[in-house]
Image 1 (cartoon, rainbow, N blue to C red):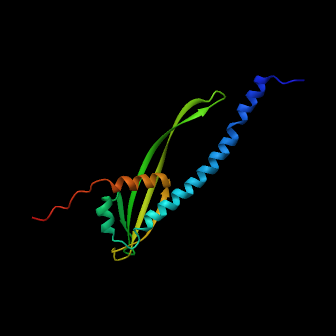
Image 2 (image 1 turned 180 degrees about the vertical axis):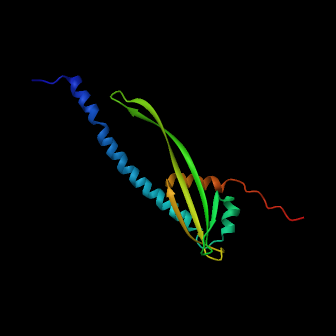
Image 3 (image 1 turned 90 degrees about the vertical axis):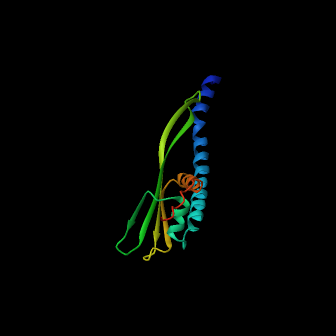
Length: 147
């Protein structure tokens, strides 16, 4: 009883994506941890700095909130639409799919609002790093002197 070469190839093609998916999942996990570490390192530079320095370098936050304790929260956020092309099916025909990813950075000041005490993040580390990079390169308007 010999198997037909075409059916043997077909069953190998169906099993091929599983090891590839596992390898990508493993590599992606390592990549995300590296991006998280890079993001935390980037944000830790702001601890102890003045919130005014943050606004001068990044521009005004999307929102701010004054807590009852006197602490202020400055929030920067971004949404990215990401499109990917992946091989699909036995003939690896390309399929395109899109999804959105977000980033939110909350900078908490001390009660006197003179220093940034902590930063929290939520969302994609990659989107956060892209947002920080674009904020860094966005020219901020110069303050106009009083007349």
